Amino acid sequence: MAGRLRAPTGRYGGRSAEDRQAERRRRFLDAALELFGGPPGYRGTTVAALSQAAGLSTRQFYEEFRTLEDVLAALHLEVNGWAEQAVLDALGAADGLPLAERATVLFRAYARDVTCDPRRIRIAFVEIVGVSSRLEEQRLARRARWVDLIRAEADAAVVRGEAAPQDYRLAATAFIGSVNGLLHDWSAGWVDATLDELVDELVRLLLGMLRPEGWRPAPDVPGAV
Image 1: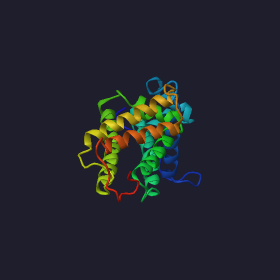
Image 2: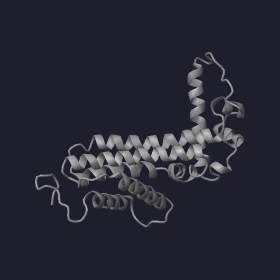
Image 3: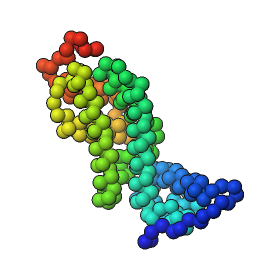
Image 4: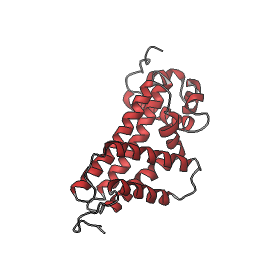
């Protein structure tokens, strides 16, 4: 298809065209979460199968999206957006906490959100990989947002005297890879641990990164030992 079909305009059944379009889009995304996030996966799903799962027609699909890749792109952004909002909400409630406690709040919020539904894990870490250069660029851009968040937290900890001063760009990039890999493996049943044990391990990794051997926080810093 060269582009999306034009959706009908005007009110119908007391509902605006915009409301009906938003509902159709939501139904397609919900169906995609189900199909892409489990068997058969993105690569095994057709437009016809997705439309059937959404209870809509293929014509209605092309009124909302050009390709299945567009659906996967939208769903990947949505899954990441849910996790990001969970972390931002948690950080808002963690103001003033010592570094270790603040990090625990951050990782618990992220881990609980991305693992609350195994389909989200599959969308975020499995189905998106290797689809196209466009989606690879999107995946890396979203990962860069998480790297920036970790760097911002690290830089703020340095200002508070809770972390060693240095450029955390590379360390944050490596750390995000560890976080996502660990959560994916745990969700797949390859790691025998509770979610709280995973969070505790991630906090230890972060503190090891921010507080290298031989460095100590100032005595007046909260949580200093």
